[in-house]
Length: 190
Image (cartoon, rainbow, N blue to C red; front, side, top):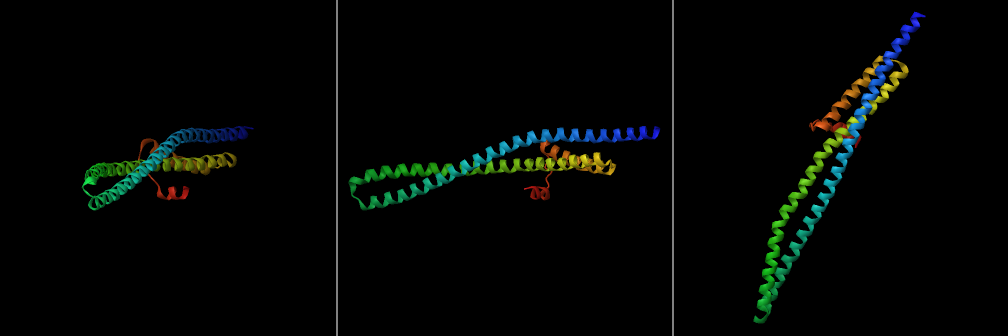
């Protein structure tokens, strides 16, 4: 009877360790999921703003090209027409030159803004990948812990702790902005 009590007490200690492992990892994974969701929203906003900026950049370059062509045509027509049309040609030439100067000034600003949104997206994507890796590693850890509880093998619980530790490190990297990034895991999980 004493042997059964000792064995039962041992099982309870092991199961408590498994339970604490699962609860701790699940809570951390939930917190990572919230942060990851916020990062994904920021990525979507950056991507949307980047697409808008590139569209505005392309539209401005198109308007520049159209006005440059119109200026060349206006100058050509000015050469072909008489003195009466010269003032209209001069006014249109001045207007087109103003528009062209405006577009030439806008284009580098628009390009820089679009590139900034792309850089913001890329920076956020690193942290998104960190949270994805944390989620995968912690999910593996919780699964191994569940198996450890069923088969009561301490080595399985140790493996669970190993995967859990890696998941927590990746999650902390996402929370704290560390540059820890696994290209292998990113490619594997993407």
